[in-house]
Length: 496
Image (cartoon, rainbow, N blue to C red; front, side):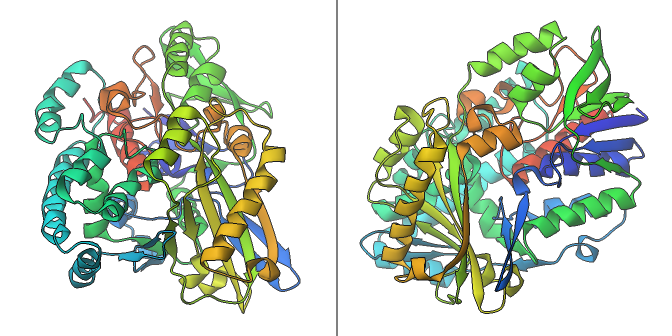
């Protein structure tokens, strides 16, 4: 392989393009939007006070060693392009009754916080941590960067999956170790960060806890967008070519081979291989219209379950808030019931839980002097379950979210707003071509994991590859960077 194209400059596409270019493959990365990043897009909002910077997400950076490896493979150092700073506490979790729980990898602090909820759960947490370490070793270290192309590979992994009761949900496993309901929520909510329902997502995803414990949670100085910019700079340093603002409209095939691609502007590129980091349904259904096998795959994908969408309210505020940490989870009055509304019933509930991102807590450059940047994220049903007119629903939900933050954290919130805007499920659909406006592609349930997820290499077209949230191992920065490593191994001849 001498020349390749990667569609989509999200984290997965960038990581794959860097790996290919590092191996000497002439790689062109084509992005539909005016900026790279995919879901890690960003906006700058100028105001009379100055300019606010808003990251679209993801905002929780874990597994920094997986990112650093993208530089190391060509003898470079990530620190030359990106400055990563540790964040502590990892999250502050709070409930409507006023109880708060700071979650970190400081054993003394964490054990004291657990003991305040239930002293008996300190020992149970230690047992859960041992379980998490086991699934981390099996699910992330051993299998997280290996492609599952045939059912035999799934059978080979089955003993480990059985050993760790992968058929059980994360919440079920957590509940077998700890008794306190708030602690059960604190140890199971992480699956929401990759689009999974804690009540249904395979217990293998408990590995996220170990991933955070060992590697920490990090912030890229200047915003997640600076991590993206550093990856682009490194890719281009290696000789890679980036093409922005030109959506791919077709992947051309001849028989069982990809021959090239075409874009909206009329640009055509002949290549030895194509890898798509675009939405998996969009890739198969829209970009591969002339391939019969791809259309069959598209029909199968349409029958699968997809993760919820997200409603994100961005706020630029007057004042600073040192008592509000970088990452907060504001749980609502319900947990299981709310999750059922979002994932099963397709109901936009009166109540909600929020992830509150406060980057100016760690980095004053994200807002003008004396000001702060926030976003509040609420998981909501995807458009297939809740096909609402978000131009009408969005403003109503905005007001509810402002009410909640005002009640629980910032009493004079509305008086402090300098700029605000929201990002809705229809934006996920229209800007990112995300099927049903899903925030994380395929839902990470056991029957849609590993071999049962979209394959990193197409089954019928031998030089067509996929990377990103819809492929193994799934969503989140470590997931899509891991998928890039698996896909690169296949493209470069080292995969099975």
